[in-house]
Length: 94
Image (cartoon, rainbow, N blue to C red; front, top):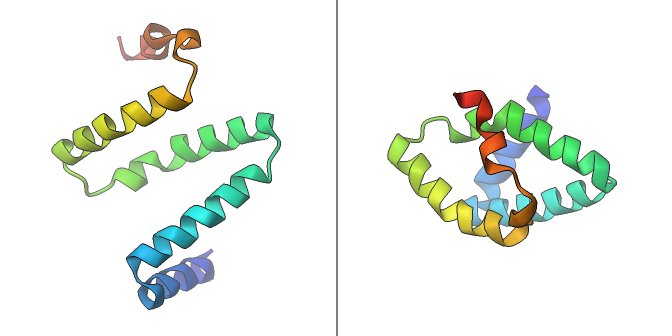
């Protein structure tokens, strides 16, 4: 895994951040689509559960709030809001 991390970091430096982001996006779409839908659900949940904290590492509360506010409309557009149990999702926080 260390070798893969090194390769990714090196490629990012060579390509520049914009091109690296484009390549990562294309790769991630291809990677995710290679799983059947039921496995995709498990994989995406696992990725978020295991790595969301790392993805947000170093961001201020203000930056996190700004990010969340910008993501909510995207989430609302892609998910069936009528079927989502918002209160149930947050029941563990009380």
